[in-house]
Image (cartoon, rainbow, N blue to C red):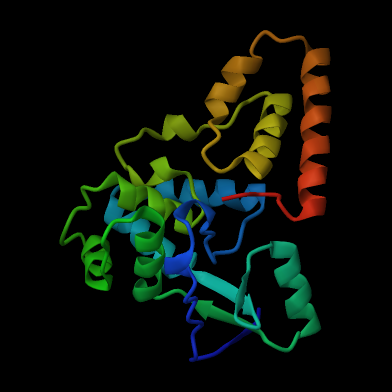
Length: 215
């Protein structure tokens, strides 16, 4: 989707933006796509392998007249309409390093990223790991291979799973599914359904105002 161009966007406002307001150019994902990516990363054993996978498979981003477009529905619409000024790019290491440095405040070079990918050098700075996770819109613990896969298990109960999906949509990617399940464990089903109604209203409001699925 979107035509690829060589004249990659400059994004010269990144270094001038307060880190807490810096949003990744990588598109947001549906809940199902997010869970599938989590499984793909958990099948890889090392930080280098997971980082390489993200570079190779999750680095396409889109711009309209030079500004990032991250909503998947908007991306699909612009692609279908062949909108003028709608373009796609694959994020190189230089762009990733710039964004991560602006977000974390930690120095990061293109060569350092190549060293991480090649397993030549280990990253010992959690701020870098966390900012890399934010760039690719994944749970930050996915770049810590020593964290067991069980930490990412989804609730078995359908209501708990739906609550996790909605909380993920408007509450960020670090919402812990197991913790939600433990909070709801033992709650009456009627109370769970009331909670779902509240969460669904919040999600609808967030979608309508363009603030859904935050990073």
